[in-house]
Amino acid sequence: MKIPSIVTNKTYEYYEEKLEEEVSDGPMPRHIAIIMDGNRRYAKELGLETREGHLAGKEKIRDVLNWCLKLGIRNLTVYAFSTENFNRDESEVNFLMELIETTLREMADDPEVEEKKIRIQVIGEKELVPESMQETIRYAEEKTKDNDQYTFSMAIAYGGRQEIISALKDIAAKVKNGELEVDDISEELVSEYLYTTGMPDPDLVLRTSGELRISNFLLWQLAYSELYFTDVYWPSFRYIDLLRAIRSYQKRARRFGK
Image 1: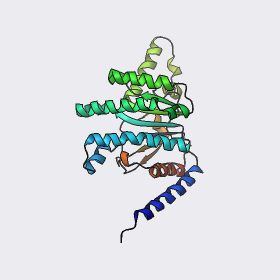
Image 2 (image 1 turned 90 degrees about the vertical axis):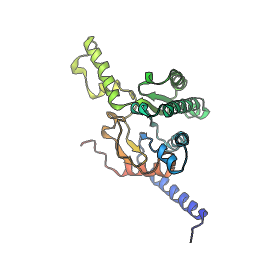
Image 3 (image 1 turned 30 degrees about the horizontal axis):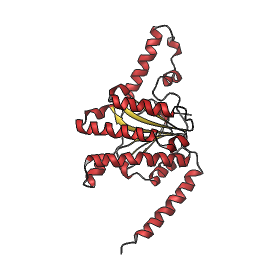
Image 4 (image 1 turned 60 degrees about the vertical axis):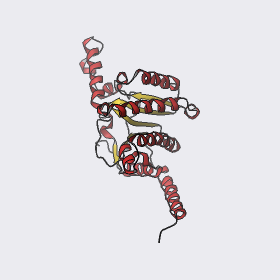
């Protein structure tokens, strides 16, 4: 006998409510970073075009941001486009560039972003993206630069190794010019030259779609992050999946090597 959907929906709502209560009583991550994966496989399984999977993934970004606001998580970083993604089919790359640009523009113009005091920033090799996107990035960052309650970061044309190399080059140049001494180089100094300077390192890094890889994401910053992997494709990611990830984080003993 098939259970009526109204029963399953009520059961789901009850479980979500209880899980939210449990999570809200525990230590909340200051910063969550997400490797958004599975848009193409989501579309394939539903018999949709790849673009429709990416469009569904775009909508999910705002859902997750709202959930983080609800829970008081002040920093959210999403991996939107890696440097390796430029190797995809040109038509898909162009579509993703347009989609990401639209997302940034919409968020910058959203009254709730101003109301909630959300600062938008983009991390990555911005010079690699089209000029129109560079203009949109400047627009979004400038418009929200004084917002100081939450930070939403989007990693675009981003690679963790490239980020570290860029930081080391900047530091080396200052040593060469006499602005820094070699003995001045420390973990704290290197962190100041990363794209994420001024932000706490992620407490929780989660990846959707079942892949168990970090994929060149925040390699320096995740040294002490808790990692969480879920089989759910990114467009299908639910509030309950986020709550489960946070509950897993809360149950782990964070000793930082002590």
